[in-house]
Length: 251
Image 1 (spheres, one colour):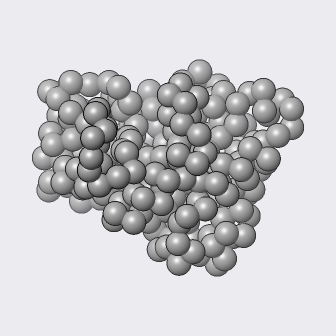
Image 2 (tube, helix red, strand yellow; image 1 turned 90 degrees about the vertical axis):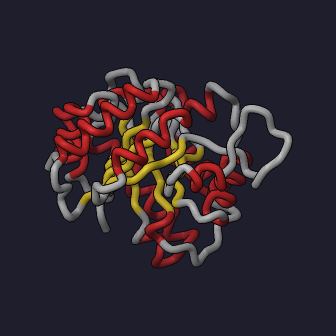
């Protein structure tokens, strides 16, 4: 199982900025280690430019930050999985904490997107994670179980493991500089693994579980060396090619 090293650029970068960063990232990473895949998830406007930068670069993939779970229609401001694929995307996110807690998406909506994206041929990353209040109340496993069970309810049980990843992102660690400790990460990832096995049987052992939450060059090596950590989902530290390339090559 290759580690999935993903960069979520969120609402940052013009087309020219994205192209410059993508080209520099390819140059700095050189030959990506055989056990890694690099995924960049830019804003929609920059997809074509980033796809061009990755055209001749092995192990680099393009993803979408969001989509609406319909093929087409009168959904002003939305984008479909078909449009993502047309822009050379092979991955998409569902359930990122900012979609849940800033933009109001509930577990059922996240589940619809996860299942529909897979149905339409995208590989999906389902993001899960608890608020600080939920952790303090001892509800981490309760929250993760709910998000996984609802988010994966309509996913075929025979889905190919390489097409579905889960990103554990404790909400309190995203963009705050706070990072879950090794024990917290291992406990959460072990629990996610157990739920994936409950849902998918042996295939659940082959699905990647990424960690996200203030990942930086200085801590990436320690994080990806932990049990059941099959990659990272990086926000702020992925915006500069120099720092993200160090994360990609860490370990």
